[in-house]
Amino acid sequence: MELFQLVTAKTIPDAVKAQAQSATAQNGADVRFIAGGTNLVDYMKLNVERPRQLVDINGLPLDKIERTSEGGLKIGALARNADVAQDATVKEQYAVLSQALLAGASPQLRNMATTAGNLLQKTRCVYYRDTASACNKRQPGSGCSAIGGYNRMLAILGTSEHCIATNPSDQNVALMALEAVVHIEGKNGQRAVPVSEFYLLPGSTPERETVLQPGDLITHITLSKPVVGAKSGYLKLRDRASYEFALASAAIVMKKDGDRITYVRVAMGGVGTRPWRALEAEKVLMGKAATEANFRAAAEAALHGARPQSQNGFKVELAKRCLVHTMGQVSQIA
Image (cartoon, rainbow, N blue to C red; front, side, top):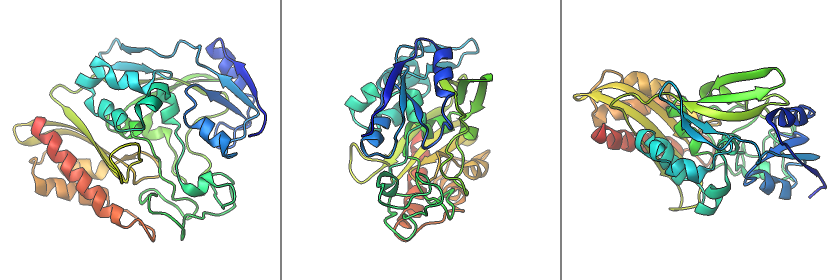
C-alpha cells in the first residue's frame, strides 16, 4: 500500500475544503473521506484505491437517526448500519430498509459500516479488484475484461459496451423503493438529490458512478413520511445463506385497498449497474388485483430490457421469481 496522509476533519466545512482539493470525487480520487472504512481500506490494500490523503470524518455530528418535522426520517451519513437496522422506527415503519441492512455483510461489518459509506459501496467485480486486468471503471479506456470473461455475478440491466459491473449494495435497493433523498454539502452549498438521480449509468464513462463533485460530503438521507397502510419487504437470493452478495434481490413497498393495489414501489438488486427501480413493474401493478398472475406480468416488465452475458443468463428468471415471491409476501401483510 502506498503511503498516505491522514487528517481529521473537525467541522463539515473543513471536510468539504479538504476533499475539494481532489481532482475528482469518483474512482481514482486522491483525497478520500474515511469513516467505517470497510470498503475503502479493502481497495487500498489491493492497490485499487491510492489516495494521497484520507480525511477522517468520524468526529462530525452526522450519526443521528431522528424524525423530520414532516413526519419522515432523517438518517445521518455516519449512522452505523447496525444502528439503523435495529432502530425501532425503521423496523416498524421502514421494514424493507431494516431487512435489507440485516441481509448485508456480517454483524461485525454492520457495526462499522455507515449509511453514506454504503451509498458509495464499490462493485465486487473481480476485474475491478485485479489491477492486472483491464477495467474501464478503474482505468478508463483500458477495456472491460468481464465482457467475455467471468461475469456470473454481474449486471444484466443498465449495462454498456464499456462496463457490466453490478452495484453490490442491499441498503441502496431499499432506499430506491423508499424514494430516499440524499443530502449533500459541497463547495457551492447544500443540495438534495433523489436517490434515483444520485447514481449514473456506466455508458461510456463507467468511472463516474454518482453525481458527487470534488468537495461534496453526504451529510444525511431523508425518508418521506410512510404511506398509511403500506407494508414492505426485502428478499435476497445468493449462493450461500450469509456474508454473500446478491445474485438477485427485491425491495417492495405496497398498499392495498381490498385486493387492489393502490400504491407500489419496486426495486431490484444484484442485477443492475446501479440499484434498480423497476418503474415498468409499478405501472403494471397499479390498480390491479394482487394476484400471482399480475405479479408475474410485473416481473416480466421489469426484466424486459435485460442483456445477459455469457454466464449470467440465469439471472433473468431468478430475478423474476425473486420479484414474484417478494410481491406475494408483502401483499399478504399489506
